[in-house]
Image (tube, rainbow, N blue to C red; front, top):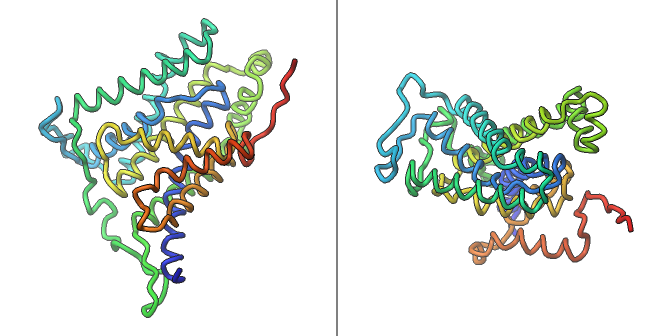
Length: 318
């Protein structure tokens, strides 16, 4: 492979892999606290993209209840601010999901399988609600959301250009900032350490005076926020491909966290980057099978190392 093409594909892989990592972290945070998978996470991913699209001044098609509706001009925001506000709204939806689908079952100490099914039901409701409100059309962000930045940046020379799309650079930069901020918050702040204590043993943390209910809510907010960021970044790169936009990414996010290790934050980052890079180097003749790569890696990992790359093996008491 030509070096120029290799560098371009490597940049592509880092860009999409960093978004996979952000998205998978949303799964990881909830799993580390409650030990269950939140299947509504993919639907919140989709909502985040729609929220940001609307805040950027996007207009919805005529097929949904909100057909032809757009926010007033005074509420239109620059992309960076819209991304932040839209992700906060997605985080609040995550809190609502916890109150409706998780807390009632948790207080009754229901079987975790019931909670998983409940989250799956919420995902179906959200997806159908999106379709009812805005239709099933593909929505594209405005071409000028990044202002006067060029469409691509040359990281090579004039003779051997290495062109990387500006949107990919933005995606990678935002992802790095989010990952760094989350890592710092969890490892070096009191709230982060309390969150780790709840993840380790919620009962003991509660006896030590930590408000576990608050930190569970915080976890769902952060999970929804990360899902909203990931959905917007992907949507700004390719488009918002309808209400089921987040389903494929939701499944891929599961592959990422299993590859990295369930409940392991560095593992989620590593798994996302690996899958992104592997997908980027799939030959163009086989691009239709690119989505199968993540699940092929998942299958191999389950056979070779079921606990994931950075996961721990737990002793089973008998």
